[in-house]
View 1 (cartoon, one colour):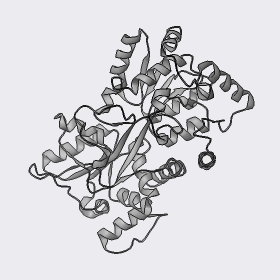
View 2 (cartoon, helix red, strand yellow):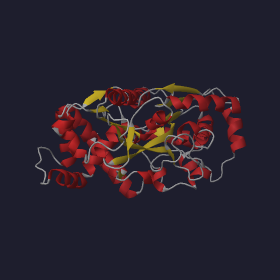
View 3 (cartoon, rainbow, N blue to C red):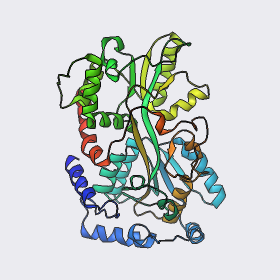
Length: 391
């Protein structure tokens, strides 16, 4: 994986990502030719028209077999039901975790099976490295009218459906006090917070992986925060202060749970018991607090938070590329993306946020880190290795 990551960074530097040229790490010439033929027929990649005729695309879509979406979020079900009713199609959603999507796409692609027409997921660097570079399993596609409105980072090397923030939830144990119960992220490694932090494994959560990668790639900031809190320079047992923080959190008995729901429920239970607890997850879960399902607070002030992208792509060799185009266009629209726009942040500047979190913006987070793709590609697999060694 690291070899592929380094090679991919070189491709990024050469500009091959932005031009849509992805040969695939182990592809044979015949495979490249076959993929190119499919792209020509599907009119994607270098064969995508400068102006797309959506009436013609819909007409072609109705002649294709029903498309399938591999989605890491159940929020895709309702908009796809509406989509099918609107267009008279029968697109199906299969809801899986990120790791299940990646594993399934790898196995299917290697076996010459191309079931996924649209992939809506997370763990962006892993998707890019394992599914776009090691394999040509997913293909960049963005409707032209959307492409014209987006920044390069929202298109490279595939379309981003939305952005979220990896952040922190907390309970105070006091219903009259909503202040953050820690003054520095390093405080969570001290005895006072032993077994009071709950998170998911980075193997299962792209959000947690993104946070850990950001801490490792922003090691100088983590050093500064350490010295601010403890009043002395850090003495490392590990490669840098980001890894050191992860190690000390594990040594402080941070709890590992299966889902973000479990994180939210654990902190809500702590609040009900009158106890302090901290959890790591995505800001979107906070909408459930505003709707009365959970009881905790969102930290936008103290602990560093991290932008986390959610890609949407077309499956290579799709038998229903026109349905895939329509799905991608719909799910990025105001109407089709409505289940997300009140919780996450749309990439399209013409789409308005709605719902309980509509007033929350990226500017509300005091320390918001953004890990460049190149840095993430070179670090994600190493962070995973580190976690597996020490967890």
